[in-house]
Length: 131
Image (cartoon, one colour):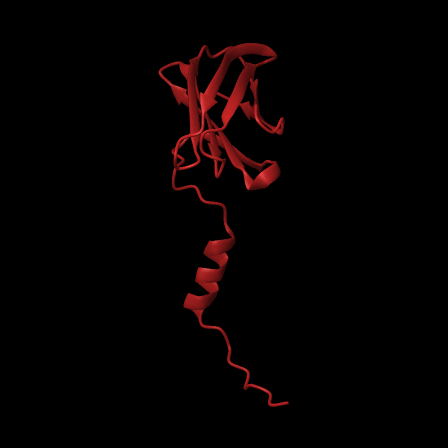
């Protein structure tokens, strides 16, 4: 067996590797709170809350889902339902739901549950909103 010679990593290579291990924040702005998750079947989800003129904008995204499937999405703020809807997955495999909600005093807990109505699979995400 032939051994390859050892070559030290360059600073550029190390920086590239380190940057690829960090979560992407390209879609985040100051003050946003974001969490991501995975569901059965390789479906990815993201929940984001942003301050919006004294209110809270809540965004929930479903990615890599089967086009045409219908998902029931329920968003709750501090245990109170603020949105209940059914959305169809677009041809790119995505669903996006947005809701502008009141901003209660103190820290709020936002929870979302997405359920695929064809398979019965569901996924939940939650985050704390400090603004």
